Image 1 (tube, rainbow, N blue to C red):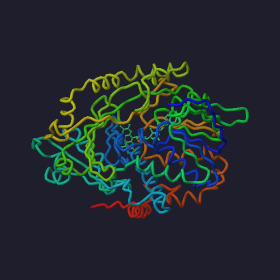
Image 2: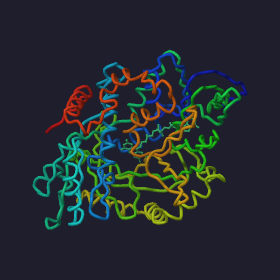
Image 3: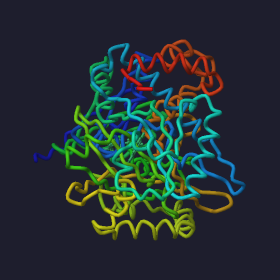
Image 4: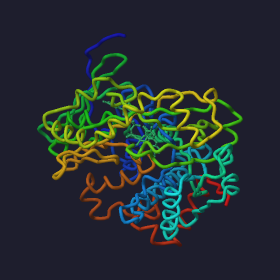
Length: 502
Ligand SMILES: Cc1cc2nc3c(=O)[nH]c(=O)nc-3n(C[C@H](O)[C@H](O)[C@H](O)COP(=O)(O)OP(=O)(O)OC[C@H]3O[C@@H](n4cnc5c(N)ncnc54)[C@H](O)[C@@H]3O)c2cc1C
C-alpha cells in the first residue's frame, strides 16, 4: 500500500457518511427536492450496502407488522396495543410509494426484483399463545391496513399454508396462524446499490469508496469539516459541508460523539450480533414459501423473534432461520473489537451503567445464545420445522445492530430497540442511531428529518407538490382511509410487480 500525505479539499452542500440504505434514501430524496444540491458521500468499504443493508446481513422483511408479534404487545389487562403496528404498516406503504416513483422515473429497474411478494405468517403453539394470536387478529381486523389478514386453527388449512412447518407435528398440540398475502421480501442491498448507481451519475454528486471518515468538526463559518482517509492509498480527504448526515449504521455513534453537539450527549450503544441457519437442501428450500414469525422467548430482545424466512436473493430462492442473537463488542460487522470500549465517554457512562443494570436478563439471554451448541440451535429450529436435520443447515453470520442507550429522567439510562434520529437544533447535522424496524421505514425516517434540516422551505410547503408526486399519500393517514389505501396498494403492487395470490 502506497502511503501519501497528499490532501484533497472540496466544498459541498451535503455530506453523507456511509453508503447504506439510509444515506441512499436521503440522498435521492434531497436531489429530487433540490436538484442543484452538491453532495459528497463517504463509504469506508469498497462497495455500497455491505454492512446491515446487504441482503445476507438482514432478514429482508418488508416490515409491515403484519405478522411480527413483537409490534403488538398485550398489556396486563389483556388489551392488544396495535398502534405501533399501524405506524410501521403506514411507513412501509410510504416506502413502496417512493420506490414505485423511482421505478416510474427509471431510477430503479422494475425487473431488478428488489422486492417480491411473499406471504407473511405468524405461527404459535400452546393455549396461551393461540388465545393471544386470535385476539391480535380480531384487533387488527378492524384496521384498514390489515383487513386482508386470515386466521386459522385448522391443521388442514395450516398444512396448505405451510406444509413443512406442520409436517411431523403432534396432532394434539393446539396451533394457530395468521396469514397476509401482501407480505414482501426486499433485497435492501440491491435496492441501495441501485440508488447509489443513480446518485453517482447525477450532476454535483461524488461518491468516495474506501474513504473512512475519521474526524468532523464545525468551523468558525458554521460549516462542517469532514476529514476522511482513503483506506487503500492513505491519502487524506477534506470536505466542507453545510449539512452532514451520519448514516454510518453501527458506526454512527462514534461519529456523533466526534461531532460533539449538545444533542448527542448521553447516547451510548449496545451491540447485538446475529446468526442465521441457512438451508443447503434445495428440496426443503423449494417446499417452503413464506416468512413465518413465532413468539419471542421470555427475556429475549424484541428483534430476536425467530422466523423461518423464504428469501429471494439475486434471483435465487433461499431459506433462512433465525436470527440467533449474539454478542460482540464490534459496532460494524467489518468493525473493531475496540468499538464498544472506545464509545464509552464521561457523558454516557452513567446512562450506560444504568441501562446495563436494568437489562441483566437481556445480558443473560445473550450469553446463553452465544453459548448455544449446534444441537441447541437445531432444537429452536425444530419448533418451526419438526423434521429438520442438522446436515441440511449451515451457520451464517448476520449483520451487527447497535441498540440505542439514552438518558432517561426516571430510569437514568434506558436501552431502546427502535431507531433514533439525533439532530442539531440548527439542523446542520443529523445522525441515525439504532436499527429497528430499520430499512423498511427508511423513507418515513427521512421524510421526518426533512422539516428539521430544511426548516423554512418545509414550513412554507415549498416541496409539497414534489413530495405528493413521489408519495401520493403524503400528509394523509392510509389506515383512516380505505379507499385511498386500496388505490395506493393497487398502484404500488402494479408498478413493483407484486402479485398477490388471494
Ligand atoms: C440481523 C439483522 C436483521 C435485520 N432485518 C431487517 C429486516 O428484515 N427488515 C428491515 O427493514 N430491516 C432489517 N434490519 C435493519 C436494517 O438492516 C438496518 O436498519 C439498515 O440496513 C440500516 O441502514 P444504514 O444505512 O443505517 O446502515 P448500514 O447499511 O450498516 O450502512 C452504514 C454504512 O456506513 C459505513 N460506515 C461506517 N462508519 C463509517 C465511517 N466512519 N466512514 C465512512 N463510512 C462508514 C459502513 O461501512 C456501512 O456501509 C436488520 C438488521 C440486522 C442486523
